Image 1: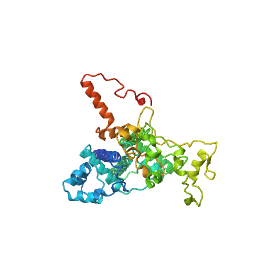
Image 2: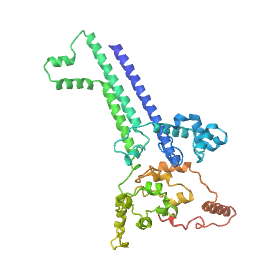
Image 3: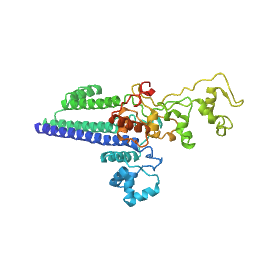
Image 4: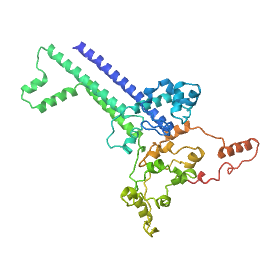
Length: 429
């Protein structure tokens, strides 16, 4: 029996080692895909989708059609690859005339992570319960933490398999014990012969299992690992509302207005280019069009119910074309909300940096109802600032800053006002 116990100990140690290596492998793989997802959203979603074309083509299955090394070269500097005369690069550029920019700030590891994410996202996955919209995008949210559901599921599976193997090995040892003791009755048979109930038999089995120190240690270790992983996942995603999609008082479709009708974002959100806030358009902006556009053709000659909500809010009578005396505000629900400690200025990003709305808000022109596309975490902002290049050429701010530096070098006095000290936003926000 001593030899059997030694064998069992060696097997148990091997199983634990295999479990730890499996968890480590799953963690690294999940981290690479998660890092690739973050980089893809920051650099690629303005032009590409996985399942649909945007400005550039859809990327589903691209890893099956092109060699990995070629994809790395193409992503990092496609103009240089085309200029080198690469036949495959020239062919792709002719199929899709929109020139893909170079990404010199991306390392080889970053590009490998992006390719790993595209390959993973290209695999068909069953839809999660709850349908599309907020739940679908939060794959991300829940998905958004560094600990993925795939890693957690793999860890649980490894623990269950190892648990079952230990149970089987314990069963084998007990069988050998009975053979060595020359057909002595085991505990269960003795309990049944004494006329005890099935419940008592089950209790007896639990007592035997509770005396197995290795099994108890493994169960406790597994519970601690699962609870720790779940707790870390919850804490990491506290305050992250990626995929948040509240029900608005009016079902305004960005897909119809910004996508199909191609209305510029700043026509409604005029503050985005000139102030800190993008601003929510007043009903008067809506009435610039819906004074005449009622979508009655789609509702049997009746005014669209959603357009009628605008009329009710401003107390407008479309038949007499007059305003009443009882207007009331449209109570829109804020989707993108930063904590009070964070200061974000739309004009600095839109006008000075020239960043597209889709960079932060995602493919807004395809959304039937708006949801929070990006996590809006500090890490997400910092990664964007680390990757975004500053274009100082022809920028009035940097021109004035350089001029101020030249004056300082020549010994001239510079006041705080010259450096923007009179701007309201320096103190009031």
